[in-house]
Image (cartoon, rainbow, N blue to C red):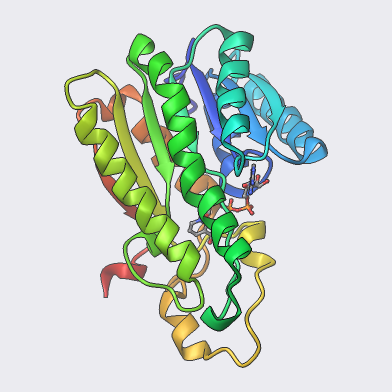
Length: 258
Ligand SMILES: NC(=O)c1ccc[n+]([C@@H]2O[C@H](COP(=O)([O-])OP(=O)(O)OC[C@H]3O[C@@H](n4cnc5c(N)ncnc54)[C@H](O)[C@@H]3O)[C@@H](O)[C@H]2O)c1
């Protein structure tokens, strides 16, 4: 049964053109949200918006999806996306910091530029989007859901920058949660394991990679559906999670269980 937990709410989702972000945009819209879908690819964003409108129509819930092009590696673009969302819909209730990128790279081949870019997309964007969103979330008693990774709680080989950034997202979630404890704003984090998305299906491995090390983070039950992980994001963003603040939720079908 489709619910309407987000009727009247405005939800900004980054990385909404693909994978988990697209699944979140569709789920929030199906539950009645006005979704502000942010990514870099206008054609794919438009396809997600069309798909979400179809789902919302079937459910009979008045979800709306507006799209916005931005490169979240640019702090000014992060601020601009939040401002444009509030301009478009008049408020902001939920920020889903989902955009991310992952390359497997052997440490000796990591350049200064590559390191800085991985941290800008995967970590700094989460801070600058949150910083811009917080005044609006204080007004709406809203919340933030950050998407880290199991690489936010364990190490992944050939992924130094990604792992450092995702551990950073976990730390940032906790730091902001403490700073905003005396406010109504909630801030939480989801750490997915392997999902069946373009990020997982198009990833390449370094020459001479030790696959035994890479397989340490293999999904024990196969790759998860992004739509299943989106359910945890939506739960944390909803009033069903009213008591959950500063929490890190591993969603990995048992991968880190041992
Ligand atoms: N797929 C997995 O196995 C997996 C596992 C753990 C965590 N994650 C995380 O989940 C999140 C979603 O990943 P996914 O698997 O759906 O990946 P994906 O590649 O399918 O989608 C990533 C999205 O982020 C956007 N994006 C990337 N760089 C951007 C930038 N600079 N500016 C704006 N948008 C940008 C892309 O356009 C796309 O919309 C990411 O944070 C990723 O690190 C994925």
